[in-house]
Length: 449
Image (tube, rainbow, N blue to C red; front, side):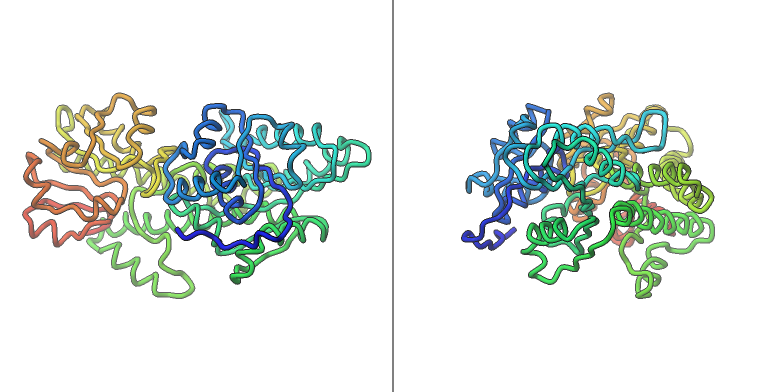
């Protein structure tokens, strides 16, 4: 990825990024690449040390390149000392996690609260605290009240919200060249400060939406809920296609040419996963219940159920290819990450399907280009291999569960040389059925004849 051009003569505010997980590490590196002095803060000492050495703690294309460049420039530093950040920066981005609460669909915002409270306690100068974490609507207003009641005398601290729209596998580009920037604030001062932070993408014509706090909070969960709806809709259509012998891929192509619908997120498969869509969808439903509008968003529960059912449909389809008997059967699995170009296995449909087959007695070998280690930490009983040929050696069935480009490019004849039975189930509809059938393979997809 090319380096972003910056004007070194311009005096800029200093930034701190609180939380250096997936969102925070990318944001800190990219803001430093924009020319800002940035301090990344996290309580995880090991993660901070890795980042400070230029080693990204997770796989994300181009991140290590941008991280190394930012560190070499001297613009980017990392620390575990929140007080040091409070003394260093003018603008603080909150990028901590908001996981699903144990025993509830609601989001756990305790990390956000702790970060803001810690900053307010340590700040002795005027500052802007900008939330990027995905939170239930109303969080920013609540934190604004907290700041007003607890800021030190004579210190002006404002809360703003600037939701992130990162796609794993495209996070660097989405940060430096976003499709829109949304800022919720209560003052011209905050809006002006964030326009300066994002001056480079704004100069490139990126749309800037200035709004209130509640709207800014809602944008992310509304967007994710809509995308989840598209995914579950086309997967529901795949189930219909299986019943009537239609082709869901052709159906999706025809729908996608309608400009009102578009092609994105209309690929049928085993559904969505990861650390955002499932969690955000459920948290939105939980917040709707708290606001007294649960019935209005009740359809989101159906969206979630369709998504989860798709995983079970895939497992059952694979089992059917063995006439219902999985015990002792050898299965080669291609993919463990929830999506390609990522090593993230949180709520991964691929791992869910692989584990389901394993629990039903199959011997499952798994290969993922980047997610083997993370997958093994979650499901250590699966057999992980170093390449797709090893994973498929002796297999009676090959399952494509994550649509890496590496898998789409596999030569059917090359794979035929290592399997015991030429049988493949493309659960992501990423392969050309005719190519594999012409090579003598028994081929099955979801919603495809």
